[in-house]
Length: 108
Image (cartoon, rainbow, N blue to C red):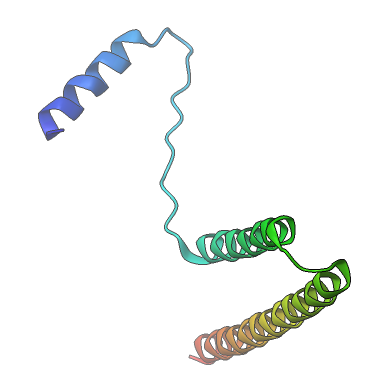
């Protein structure tokens, strides 16, 4: 699409507005933290779905499958805890940095 096409579409859209209609502009997400959280949520969901499919397709006895599932869930829980600890440490460090910046600006 060219800039001219964009302008024509915008002119057409403006002509279709009635008096009193509001125009709401949206911005695209820049990724950032929400993108990271979405990615992590997708990874966890994918792991859970994969584990479920593996359970359904597993040709092993129930006791073996339960033991493997228990280990998997334990590993996932430990990984999640480590990630949360890392994120907490990152947030603390960022807060400390910003507090220092604010103090420096106040002192000037």
